Image 1: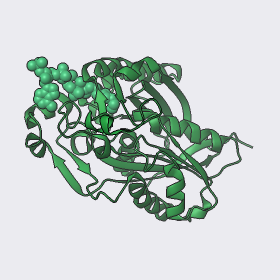
Image 2: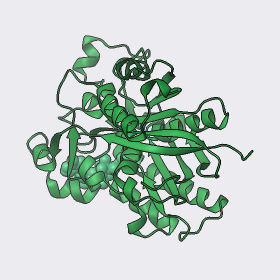
Image 3: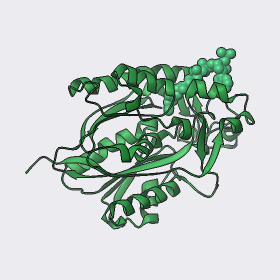
Image 4: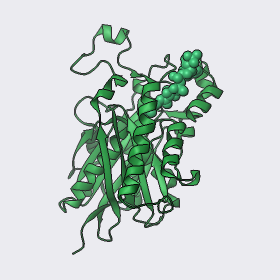
Length: 331
Ligand code: UT7
């Protein structure tokens, strides 16, 4: 019998309908469309406005769409790995809440918190369940309701983030397609530059923490930018080298969408032309765990069986990494 690899067999995504444009942000903070577009590449983001809806509600729509596309029922799912930093609740996991809402009665699942690299870490983890031979259908989800932790009076962060979510199904493959290799990293010293100050066991929520706006994202953008450029470019070029891939061999780069300048620097180090780079930061902004699956969702029709694809991300923690996979189907 051939070795079992884990392949993506279906992808779907969801972004909420409401838009927050650069012009809208000009009314909230001291910024302007030209600055945002030239410094980040972002024109607009989608926002989940209804206060009664959470991250799992975006997942319900995306996952139900995926199940329909793949022609399977929710009770066929074995595992749900939900990468998010904006879970509905601290506990139980959003994976549990989702399983209940969609009727995935035969699945176990959990949330995975690795900020912007969460989808990569979840994909790696999910692939091992499939490769073990024990699990046949693993749902890997990445997404965030970033608007729930953004201070819309802080121009350092509110211009960047948006809401959205994507999901993929991993299934066994015996043609050698799917996930081939990964390089994944963490450096906890990076926590000082991108974090949420309160809400955890270090600083439980109090009136004071709320007044001090400590439940919002804090980012030292300049420092994160510096590490992101070198981190993403390093792992992306390393994974090419150790798999003997030239720029011609790589069909697509799927980069985390934090800043167009970081994406450009990564593609340049890999020697890739712009037409091989998935970019949707202009209309989605940075959706944190959602960026990579949302790219796959938007580009799905262009992907061909056997395409060599490199996914790459850098985020809070610090966390970063790259995954090399061979696309497994024509849509
Ligand atoms: O996804 C998780 C990982 N996150 C990232 O990878 C994000 C990495 N960081 C970045 O993308 C960028 O650092 C930012 C987009 C956050 C900021 O861009 P920057 O080019 O690093 O700007 P800066 O912070 O160095 O600020 C440059 C200038 C400053 O003015 P002075 O001191 O030169 O007069 C800022 O006060 O731009 C000013 N500025 C703004 N002006 C208009 C900062 N934010 C804004 C703004 N609108 N929103």
